[in-house]
Image (cartoon, rainbow, N blue to C red; front, side, top):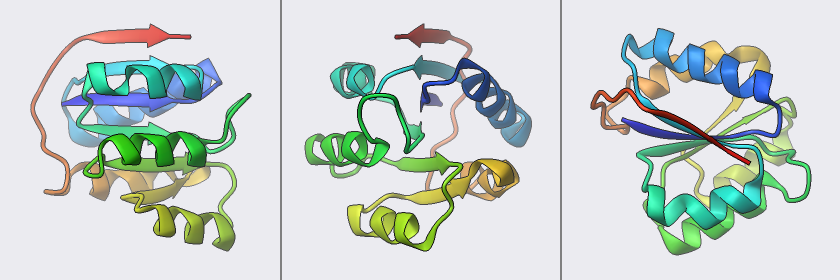
Length: 131
């Protein structure tokens, strides 16, 4: 499975990446982006199976990035992973057509999503980081 992780903190990307491997028991092709702009630019060429997106990025909102990706690919599978677990953020995620919203302090909530049939699971081994 090819997974795009978008978060402006390298340590958080590492934690999420490790959790994905532990939760699924598989290695995946992980592509990391520090900025929303680079993720938007590379989404089409990378064609990830799904995206794990932070909301609070440095220069652009994860909501904006998600909206732009969904305009290009209405079938994109985006999971928002955020420290801001508020009803208004969850509502906005629903309005945009986001697959799921997971609080960073409850990453274990990702496990059933990652193992669901909504996400196709093939194995891969590559890892890339982009700024």
